[in-house]
Amino acid sequence: MSRRRRRSGQNRSLGRLPLVVLLVLAGGLGFAVSSAYTAGNSVPSTNIGQYTHTIDATALEPAACSSVLPSALTTIVTVATGGSYQPAGSMSNTLLLASSGAETIKTSAGSNNCVITGAGSDSINLKAVTNQVCIASAAALSSEKGCTTTVQRP
Image (cartoon, rainbow, N blue to C red):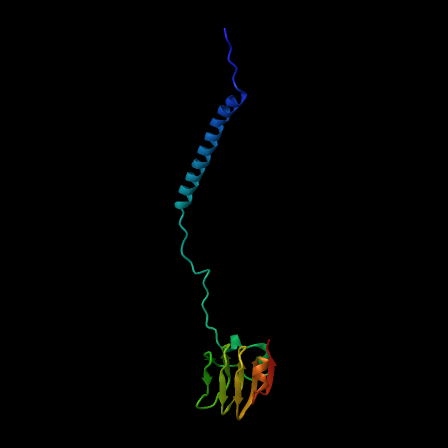
């Protein structure tokens, strides 16, 4: 009689195979059951994550302007890059926002305005106007005319 020896590694790997198969099947079954349960639930539509409101000039007004100007800003004007703003009439209670390019801003009359420029070399010339706050770069402020209060921005 001859006896054959079994390799010890072969016996162990076959012993763990049913356990691994059982764990994979249990995980798959748990996933299928939870997916079926949550798919049957319906959540009503709400607007809880949505809030719509208008942003006006007062909401955008910087503290440097609101602390100096006696009345609230009512109009927002934007100047495109390299553009110019020269109103035909007076400019009053206006928040004027220039871009980062070199813009030209000229007025002939008005009061209580807040002019904010970008980093470019803007030309600010506010004639016959009172109570004007200009927030601008050093380059724009070096040649500004008519700003009653100036704030240099970086």
